[in-house]
Image 1 (cartoon, rainbow over the protein chains, first blue to last red):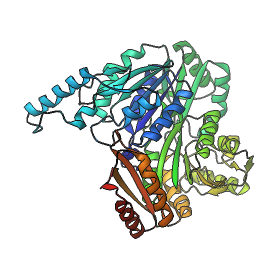
Image 2 (cartoon, chains in turn brown, green):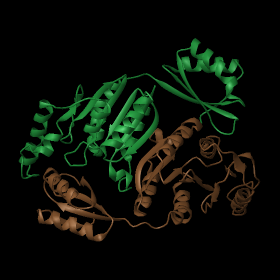
Image 3 (tube, rainbow over the protein chains, first blue to last red):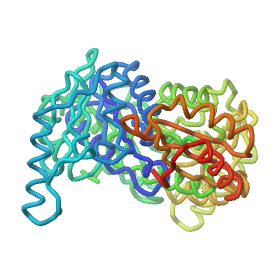
Image 4 (cartoon, rainbow over the protein chains, first blue to last red):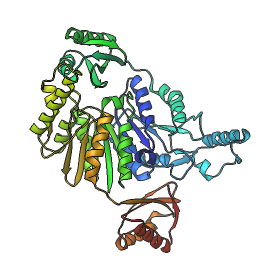
Length: 252
Length: 252
């Protein structure tokens, strides 16, 4: 049961934009109990996107979340690449077209744009891969897409953070259901991280938990995340480490 | 002539940390004239790291920069994974061991840690893949590594941003040389990429340029990146293609 995240955009590969979207998506998936196994970023390039989507599908994740490249401009090619990667046609969706028309009319009536009419660029956003379920974009024009393909739940979201976040919360997460999985963030007070390693290794052997540790700067504190299926195993693991002489504070 | 970036760390996959390192690395590489083609992030897992490194090497980038997982804790496994991915042994480097010992002695003398002695966890950081050149870490304990492998320049850097940045600037970028290397992104308006191919091939024969082309939308546009050593050869190549009947727009 793992998930992958694919972010798309040349600006992410030139370093002009820091990819905070994939971190946000990964955090929400993790909170849902999914193990995010890999994140990938490629540019606005049909062949690159097709290739990486096929690679991801070959690893058989339960969930793939794609973000970026749904806009009206010529370099927004994500839906086309998704369709080609899945061997599906791109279909003009009348329901999406209607929604996009309404969106621009609202902008026009608010005086934000001077032409409410649909043009090719705006119309382009109404094309989804055959068999896709449109995902409502409450913050922008371009709809997202939900596609079940060979057992993988594929969600295609916009790249604009505000649009992506709203769609993730309202349209994606409800479709992923609730899974039982707990994380506990702790702060270990210790002057030297290297002394911690043997204790962590012994804890991993004895209890059904995963442990992530990372230095919080030199000196005092080491951040620790305990992952487990229930509070009890996390509590036992924590108690064991305390008996080994680690002093914990809750939270980071 | 492209580069790839691999960042490693569970905290990047849980969304606890936004991956600003890969953006920084991508920006500096782009400024050096490299086309960063893909960024990948995996967790602190030997098998995952091995797998993704082999995938990246199979795409034959000229440069691969890896960041994260060089510390003393149980989940810092990057050097081991790199060695295994390349089919090399991990070797204890006495020169690195000496530097690490000095580093902890300095921290001890500053009163930041209460034990200056080397232990297994600290010693672990002195192991590099066979044939690697150590990269000096001016900000932390763990050395980086530079490995030329089957024509790919592989750099392994720490994940702590301050350590990574110093090593990138002082140890990595100088090894990439001052490549006078320019990229020009163009849009070719053409309905059929196959018509483009013979023209591109002739251009490659006649001018000292490299060309990357890919569809950018619904058949109307082909994205083209012209790589050359100076503006003049790029301009000449562009002019030649225009004479062959390609209509260009600047930028993507």
